Amino acid sequence: MKIAFSIQQKAKIALLLFCIMACTILIRLLEDKSLNSMNNAFVSMYNDRLVPAADLFYVSEILFEKRDLIEKHRRLNISEAEQTAKLMAIRNSKIDSVLKKYGKTFLVNDEKSSLQQLKQRLITHQTLEKDAVFNTKHNDVFAFEELNYSYKEILKNLSLLTKTQTLVGKELIKESESLYAGTKIYSAIQFVLAIVIGILIVSIIFASNVIKVKQEKFNLN
Image (cartoon, rainbow, N blue to C red; front, side):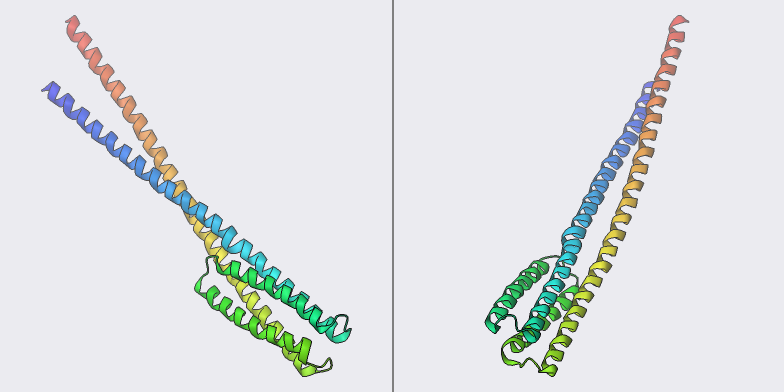
């Protein structure tokens, strides 16, 4: 009976230890998954938010440069039309390159819509720029007002895209904070399981010592 009871107790302890081991492995897997998700969120923050935001600012700088070129061509007539058009084409190529790079990043639906609208506005704006350089007279106020209006609308699109970047960035930060809170919970559970294992080990050692003492007393008798 004692042997059967001892085997039964050992089986219970073994089962409990197995369950603890399984829980530890599961928690570890969940923790690794959370850490991987946190890493992806930070990578996305840099590749899909920080870098594109800098690129949008760069586009606005190029647009300002083009505007300055047209103003110089209009007021001071520093360069010939062909030379101005060539300088404009270089800057247009830079903008296209930046937007292609931007389009390859992760975009939410609002960004896709705003980016498509921005591209359409830029095509229209480039046509107005060509007219301003080649066809429009220097004193044609209406034509240049139309160009300025187009320029302001493009800046609005850029501003909208930048705001979207900020909003999505905040969502990524919240996601990272939530994942970090989850890893803290997993660590706390692992700590509790370690304590339970320690208690079990002490209990087993104590129980084995008690049995040993009883056996020694029995042998003395």
